[in-house]
Length: 313
Image (cartoon, rainbow, N blue to C red; front, side, top):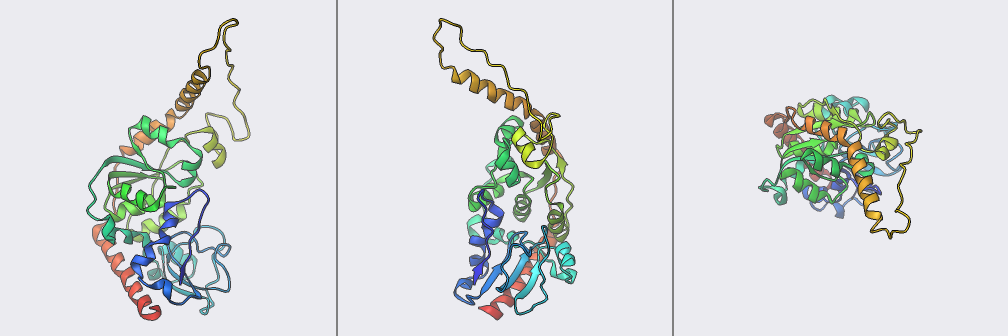
């Protein structure tokens, strides 16, 4: 059996969980049923993503993009459970089949347990924001720890578990925080954030998704998300700054440094609203799913895994 892994050029720790999580949950699964693909963590139930003509075992995946797959052929689909009630409804399944995102099970892995707290408040953006924005600098201005979702999955998970509070634009940032009982606050910088998948997970654990909106951090990020930045539309342009050259007859001393410093200062000035918005969001009331709710969902997912062990292993 082979786990499906949506591998992106930019990297995304939530998708990368599939590289090793299933070895913990279903030891030995790679040695059996070579014709079967295990479809697990991620918003991947999309007819344009998953290969046709391949037997697929679905455990906790979600829908959120594109056309849902036709799951009527039982010879191609063994759908044990999905991420939440909204995915179940979208696929025409009983609501009970929407259990929880399997990523919550990382909290059961011994290597992530009893980790000491190291960070007070940590911000983890969506990968698109990390790719195009300047959120590390914004976090420095706001007094928060920056956590890049494109980093090594296990390192990202440890940093989440070792934080006292998570401010998350990344859905799996909130999912992992909730699993480790780290209070979290949802934020969003763009309407392109998929609220269907957020609500799918949040409804499954008894939480609510009401993100605090914060401004984009840079012109590049605004362009990537189709949003205006300081009143300039993505199709517009900012005037080029007038640079004063060295005085004739004098030898310039490290001319690149003043220009680089000036540019950095301008970028930070333009990102100030993002820092203010992020700081304000970090002071909002955080949330956690009810303890009993999450424990019950893990138990139900455990029953599904037991059934898979019986049928496949």
